[in-house]
Image 1 (cartoon, helix red, strand yellow):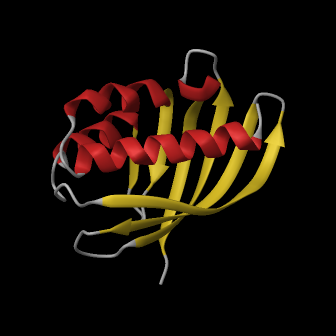
Image 2 (tube, rainbow, N blue to C red):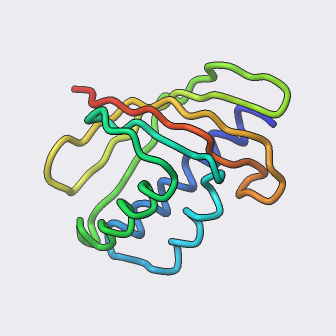
Amino acid sequence: MSFAAAVKEIEELHVAFARFMGPGDEAVFARFEAAFAPGFSMVGPSGARLDRAGVLAMLRSRQGAFGPAFQIDIRDAVPLAEAPGFVAVGYDEIQANRPGPLRRRASAVFARDPAGPNGLRWLFVHETWIA
């Protein structure tokens, strides 16, 4: 596994998020299910902890919520740690054309999994709001 593969996965998954939460493209929901490992969890920017089922339910509730102009841009990806079979990456997420806070700083941990998109699966994400 490599940092480059993880960054590619981050970028591709966020394109899918924008398609789902923007125009509401149902076809990309399976991408989320494939990306998140069975034990996936995240801490959102509000501090709430969600397991995989909770994240999928939250995404489902936001289908089409932000309209077709919604966009997400990933910037400033940096390697945080790498070990055999695992990689951790930090990145900034900038959202456009939606109400509310628009910037998040995230750390994500991935495991190598040939069945996952880009050969890996998301294990954990921690996000915080940034100015």
